[in-house]
Image (tube, rainbow, N blue to C red; front, side, top):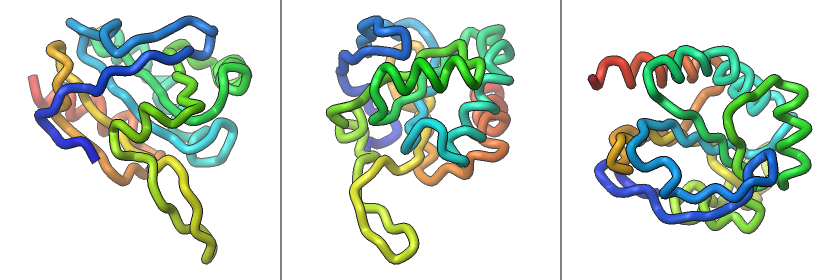
Length: 154
């Protein structure tokens, strides 16, 4: 996994509206990059719902939110529409972003092993440096924790 103090890896993918998004688009802005396994699953829905509800609070503080999963643009669009998500969800279909952040790996669930996204969150400053990492996120209450940690670091 990438470490605190490192720069955000370069990327270019499509978002939930089909727009091209590059890592450089976030230069000069504080932002949250959160990785989640799959649209419409229980934990991912909880996490997205909490970030969506708190989004205006983040925006008031000049903090952007970006969600990333291997789902495609169509899935993200449906997820955003259903959940009322106003921030971009990035379609990491080739898993390039997930791999560059080190969150793509071997997972275990009910005795089965498979490759997938490990739910993780990265807080990034205006210079594009990662200053805090949450390597094992529990979805409930995570948005509030992230917001408080951003506030406490100022």
